[in-house]
Length: 215
Length: 215
Image (cartoon, rainbow over all chains, first blue to last red; front, top):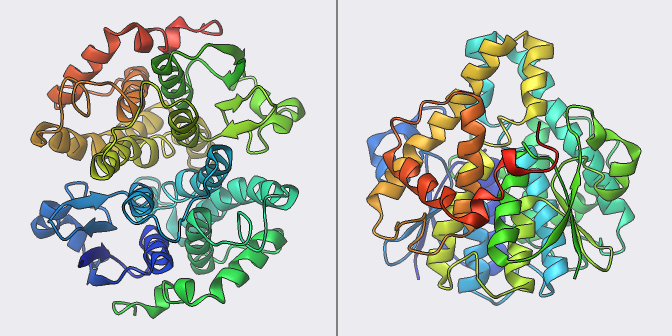
């Protein structure tokens, strides 16, 4: 099976999907889509994903899957070994909610195209964009830290002792935070989980700096 | 079984979840959380959802589920009758991706708290906020229209002849668009699907104006 991953080293949705593929032990062909050069808006990529976003996963039969969370769900359904989600419905709901706090409440608001709009329309500048980025991280990381620290279901990782769905999202977001100098002091549980993840080769190999298109 | 739905009539994540509960045929107690009055930030609601967002669903055993998409997945797993998602993994990935285009790429960016930030920090004003809202709807509705119109899997609804997961998200977003006067002319397929959904009592009963806290 040859999977083709259209992605970009620094994109956090790409990082989370690389970690998920690594956790599953699935090999993939890395196709870099250079966002700053606008390759995601080129006609060639529009044929792959009309929305012009990375990542996208092309399957052996030519089917293209989009949206990283939807692809991670597909991975669990099509390749049930080494599950990313726990088995019990309420536990699954907890893990999905943790993942979605990052994937819905932080990432889309702090995306490159949104930051560009702030610059172009409101003249936000580098400082304004950084303040914006940090604001939305803190708005969600504060309750996320509370929820992780308070729950007996939190273990070495977001849910127990097996890294999975929520960890992929958290790991990628913390990498993204580093670029925007987010103060991580208030988040000891998140820092502890990130360190545990970064010690695993499946995650470390997914990190932005480790990708062939990194610069 | 008594489900308790903490929500707000105008919140589009609440609308999508009400539609999903109605499709499942599950009764629920409606608990209005008045966002403009800041009730979601009050201590009482923080005990329900530390993130202070609606909707949240309280189960009979006191478990509180958060994040509308995670709750919709739970509905399908805990109440498999009248499935929101199709059975086949690639079809499930398609439906989740369509839903996530709305739920990730539009809604979080156009959320009330983001619009408030634009006002407070950049002095966006009503016109600036409306332009922002419309911009992000069009950025995703254009490729969404293309994908829906091009796919043989699109039927009366987003996926075939059974309304489900993606339809709940689309229905709620189109209601939200009305408030911000989004021009829907370029989206004949989305308009057609919305009309088909609005003709179903499960959706019509979920519409913002039909809720007890509507004003």
